[in-house]
Image (cartoon, rainbow, N blue to C red; front, side, top):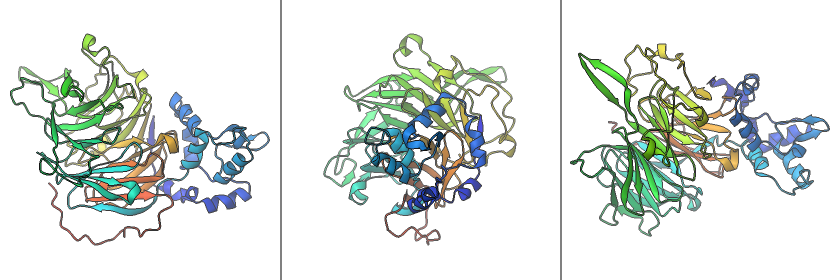
Length: 505
């Protein structure tokens, strides 16, 4: 199922949903503010996602039936904030408080669309930007060897300014440990460095003011074999790291034993062969993204330039020596994967300019082979996506839904589910090559918000886990925050003069 986002839907909304005053006026007239993207087209699309996750999402962000009943016998799916508050005070739900779904129903209406406000401005490209799990810290990584940790609760003060060690090309990824005591950073090198993020030292210069211990992900006996790491993530318990590399492998590093515990030749495509004269060459594909599926750490999701998403079960991998399943549907390489956190659903961003939603229960034991889809030459690093490829669809697409509208070019652009606490994960958001941040409704596929400020591709963005705040980072060097309703600070002028000259490589 394909959803095509329309920018006009953002204008149609008028962001009335983000104004409590407007809600109060409408409530007096017995009306409610429409949900984001609630155009006629969205209403029709709602029933097209005939899948369990649509029902789960609605249950996680729908009000209690007693709160939702405006008049006897009439049930509304959207209830204004004012009516929700009145219902709570009158104890309509007989609980005396809001449930998690009630909370999500209210908070998900207030999207972080106001702003932006400048967090930081650097002279090099921003590659990574992520909130900590509790939202108290924010991490940004830049091409010029700099990584900064900001204290969100102390006015975005720089808590630690890290100068990366032995950086090759750029900081490709960072990950903060669950206890927020350690930060790891990766580059185009098999060595991942770990920093004490909780130390009192603000300036962290590698092996000058602080030690940046190197974790060697290369297998012993490789004879100095070098590769780069695109993606690295802490496990939920903080005991392991999982990484994806450009040598078609997934690595798992045991931090307690300080050694590499597993290497999986994950995306060596033995089933796909190119003939050169009488020889056959095996395709090898970069593993651009990896993540743990849930808190257990047993399942790992991976995405690669072979266009495939794979599911790995560590409990049976050694015996089987192959993935638990493969999911086909993208026509080009995978740039990022984000797990729903339940070990069942995840989304992926692809170079075919789409986000896809997956249910691992639909996975196949092997890749669905299909030749002849691509009859054009294209490289996303410097070419626009071919016009003739825009309407192509994989004949064996196993995805649950597809979202279109954003642009995935030049770099490994990332996408995410919106926070569970405040939105019930009812939105999907992503950076884009066209310098914007896109927010889609997961169920309807509508574009509910388009954040425009940057002058270069937005590679990464992060939604605060509890507050209506989103931070975007771009190749223009700007790190900016978007909020509802705003904090009274002066916004960044949309036509501000750049006082520096950036060198892009």
